[in-house]
Image (cartoon, rainbow, N blue to C red):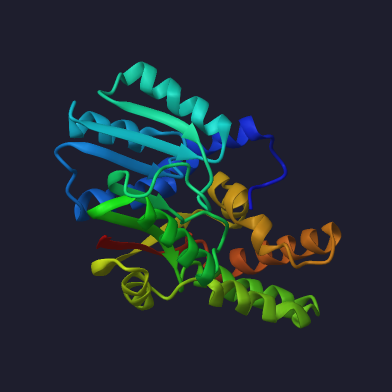
Length: 277
């Protein structure tokens, strides 16, 4: 779920300026380390965001490879097309689309990359399975399929503080919702089984433990990455805005008390599922 504090155009710019370098590029570097680009054919980047990675793929792949970027936000795609106009990649195009049903024929692409790391936070296991099926459908036989996920164990430091804040405010009746948020994320070691069950050959998972540092609670809670991508989902079960404000205040109090003048760190398990159709 995206933040309701900003309009769609503002969210697109915040995504490009802050979420891409802080979050997306972590996953893009993993893809670069783990896969080889096809020498010809078509590549698909699903949930391409503001298009920087799709443009870079096109520049690196050469004139025999066409790259298609798909995203659900027209505002992000406007920025993606602007980047393509400036960098003039060999063959890169962008179009609006849904991860649930991609508007392409079966067996269309030689490489398919899907970013599920922020859609929403978190995707349930069943939703990951459905998305994986659709990404596999549009891949050619023998093509590589890559899925980006933030798997179970991500943001554990925050959820620990969150539980403590609910306890302090006599809101512990809501604590099972925190357990749900944690449990809904796919366990990294189970992703290979999921990929094999979906029909991918030589399926494997790759996980890097990434750490994100914030100088204090205020920087964490107001950072564009956290505020626009995660907070609304994390607080969705709270009964009203007043309660949310109380919880945020208590979270800040606990974080700043426990960090003892050090930075507040949260860890994220950045995971790729990789296999061949």
